[in-house]
Image 1 (cartoon, rainbow, N blue to C red):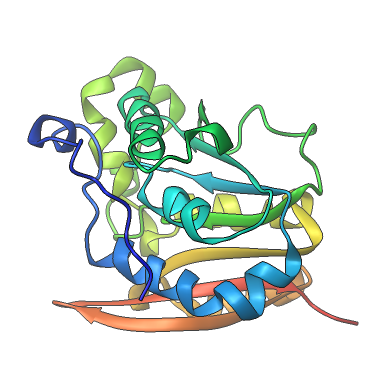
Image 2 (image 1 turned 180 degrees about the vertical axis):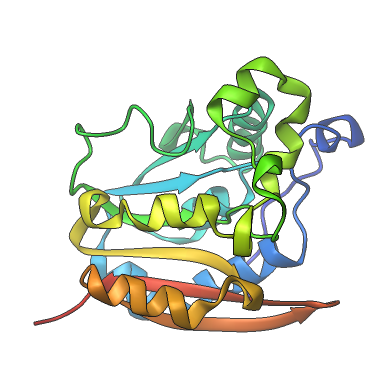
Length: 226
């Protein structure tokens, strides 16, 4: 089992403002470890993008263990998360390979990075909620205190934010790129698979786990081979 990132530098005060790594985070790490040698390493990714990096645990884990010359870009709408991500990378000696960017999902990255993302990582806000609870760039600007809700409030079917990113995969991903997302059974993964097939992507469930009442899974998306 690969070592998880050292997070001892993060405090209770940090976790009042950013998402604290939990069962979904560690399932994500386990799924990446599962794919490390067979899927990720052979691709020798140049650019990895994590959307919504929070503590920086996931990108840091991959930077620690994937022995490729990869640049790790991370985005988060929350400035505290961007700072935490950089601190986590520094704590685990990979800060020279990781660059946090404060932005809403992928805003500002296109068209410059069109077709350039070899690995995409996203643990989205997947909990079904009222649409009004979803944090957007506009609501974050007017009420920064609500940024923690951006880590969990997913709107209808828990997919308002997830679908925004999935619909961008054809433009973002390199021809041989792979994208990993955390999904909940309530997100209707079969429906997602059908939607992505129409966009030219196959979906594979890498790993599943029950966490209390939540049935979590890590989905991998790659372009359909003609």
